[in-house]
Image 1 (tube, helix red, strand yellow):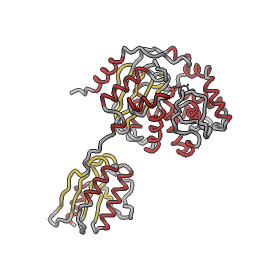
Image 2 (cartoon, protein in one colour):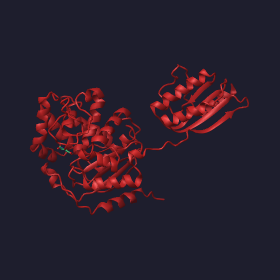
Image 3 (cartoon, helix red, strand yellow):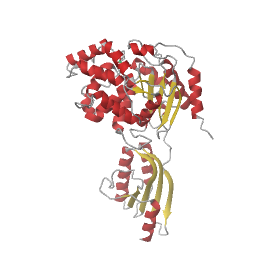
Image 4 (tube, helix red, strand yellow):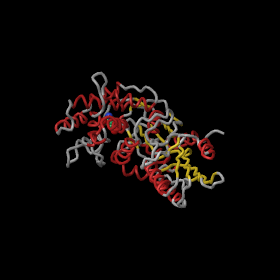
Length: 426
Ligand code: GLU
C-alpha cells in the first residue's frame, strides 16, 4: 500500500495552479525578478516525516517568516520579560511597514511588524565575530537540519532601497527603543530576511513548533514549550499582517507569511505546513498560498478552534493482582492533560479507603503535560493519606521528579512486569 498523502497534496497544488491573481513584491527590486509561476507545498508531521510536491527544491528568501524565529531566539536568549519590555504583543491592524509605535508606551506593537522585528533583531545574541543575523542563520539551520545560506543579491537590493525600514530604525533610536546604531541593526534585520529556504526547510522548522519545541527526527528539544507557545500565539494574532482576522476564521493555523511568497504554519500537536508562490495579495500574503492553506484546513480539519477532543479514556485496564486482593493495577494510556487527569482522579476517588497497594502504570502515556503531572501527584498524596501504598511505574522516564508533592518516593523506573513480579514475591 502506498500512502495517499502525496497524491492528495499534488491534487491540491494542481487545483490552484491556474490562479494567476496577485502581483510580485517590487519594493525590493530583486524580488520583482522572481518567477511568478513557481508553486510548492510541503507538510511535515510531528515525528519529522516530510511530504512535498511542486517546486519543493527551489530556494527563496525567508523575509518576514524569519520574524517569529528571531522572536523565539531572543526570548530563549534573554527571557520573556526582557523582550516584552521592548516589544508588545497586540495586533496593530496596520500595514507591516507602518512607521508608528504604540501611542501609550512608545513601543512597537508586536514582533511581526517591521518596527517590532527590527527591535527584536537587536535583541538577538551576538559576539564580535558572529553577527545577530549569523546566529539566526545557525538557529534556522539547526531547525531545518541543513546548512542554510544568505541570498547576497536580495540583501544588496533591499539595503539600497530600504528607506522605510531605515526610517523605522531611526524612529526606534529616537525614542530609545534601540540603543545601537540604527543602520547596523536595520542592515542586520535585512540580512536576516535574506536567508534562503525551501518549503521543505520551512515545514521541518514548523513541525518542531507543532511538536512543542522538540525536533521529531532527532528527539532533541530545541525550544522550551513556553517559548513555542509565546511564538505561536503572536503568529496567530499578528502573523498574517492586517488579514489576521480573516486568516484565523478561515484557516485557523498559527502562521507567518513573507513578501517573497512563502507562508508557513504550525498546528500544535499535528503538522507543520509550508507553501511558496510569489504573487501577493493586497495584504502582502501569497495568493495561491492562502488558497492552499484554506483548502488544507477545510479538507483536513486543521482549524485550531476545532480542538483535539480528549480520547475520553485514560484507564486502559484495571485489575487486581494475586490472591490477597490487595494490589490494584491501573494501566493508563493516552495523554495526560487536565481533562484526562480529572477523569483519572475521579476514577481513583472510587477506590475504597483501605490499605490496598495501588500501582499506576504510565508506560503507555504518550505525553504528560505539567498540569497532568501535578494532578497525578496530588492524587497520589491523597491516596496515601487514605491509607494506600502507591507506586507510579514510569519505565519511560516521562516524569522529571521521583517524589510526590508530600515527598513520598513513589516513582519506579522499571518495567511493570518486573516490578509486579517482585511485589508478589514479597
Ligand atoms: N525584508 C522585508 C521588509 O522588511 C520583509 C517584509 C515581509 O516579508 O513582509 O520589508
